[in-house]
Amino acid sequence: MRNLLSVKEDCQSFKGLAVLTCLFVFSFNLNAATNQIVLTNEQISNLGVEIGTLKSVANIPLLNAPAKVVIPPEHETIVSAPQAALISRLNVTVGDTVKKGQVLATLNSPDLVELQHRYLQISLEKNLAFNNFQRDKKLFNEGIIPQKRWQETHSFYQDRESELNNIQQMLKIAGMSETAIQRLAQTRQLNSQTTLTAPISGVILERMATAGERLNALAPLYRLANLEQLWLEIAIPQEQISNVKIGDTVAITNSPATAKITLLGKSVNLTNQSVMARAVIVSNQESLRAGQSVNISVIQGNTNTAFEVPNAAIAQNEGKAFLFVRNAKGFAVIPVNVIGKQAATSMINGALKGSEQIAVKGAVALKANWLGLGGSE
Image (cartoon, rainbow, N blue to C red; front, top):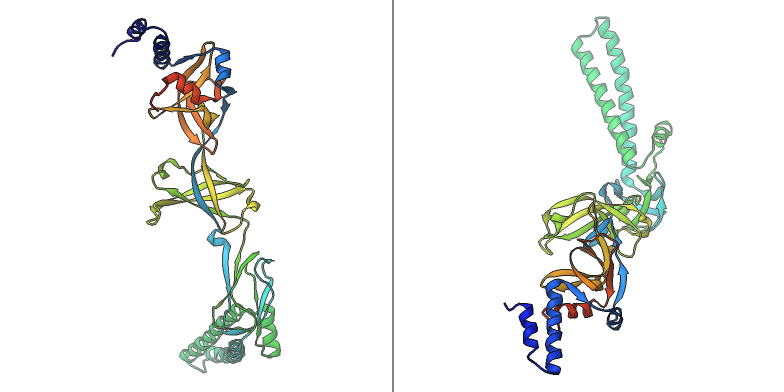
């Protein structure tokens, strides 16, 4: 390749405008070779270049991705009818906040009457079996009856006692309290009406039945959730999942809420080739709603020196990034690494101290001076 001096010598063989053009090309080649743009203050002003400073950053935006706000599964429950029943009354609807134990609905169930009748019947049989057991125990101790008969009486009593306990549990599942069961045993009055109560404190997310509707056993009435904790399910492109780490911060677009990555999925979604990452929301959760779709940025802490600059301050050439740093002669062209991007700014590192003044506007004109008119991108 011809060196720069030979180019200058060739220029001297031309006259007039040809000489000026040749020198112009020579100056551009000199700039590109030395990574120095020589400009006066007046020329810098005429080019519309504006000067700014570097801003140190501790966190680096790693990537952007879509996400959905979800409820942890252990915080969500379905309230269903324990037996076939007719809905007499619904006390709450979607959006209502309820407390644990609050009555949600009143049901009328013929099956409950049958269960109560069975409870009273087994209660009588248990009492009779207990009396027979006590009697045969005394007779056995006196040697009047054989041991086998006493054992049979004892076994029958234990069977009735176990059956009664089972029915008591079924009555509780059906909505009867311990007090109501004791009242049934005392008054022996059957009642087909029962109530459904909230198993947890939370918010009604969905109502799945209406008053007057007949329900089968285990038919759902309400979906209830505790919203004190929410998660983000993030769809991260599979080619970028290796860059994400447990503990990375998640920023949510147009929301003050933040989250922390707690889980990285082990499988790839066949539809969109993304990997699910889970993040637990740790601040300003009230700005989000369950089921909401959001856009997020994954942000990593940075232990090395890094700076934030406007995107317009960065010049690209042959796949590399450069900054124009102000000095006494004009601008030094400094190579940098782009390690993160946001909408209008980029995070960079390189041979920078942080005190430099850089061109934040007019980088296109400076790049033209550096590479020469018609220089390749």
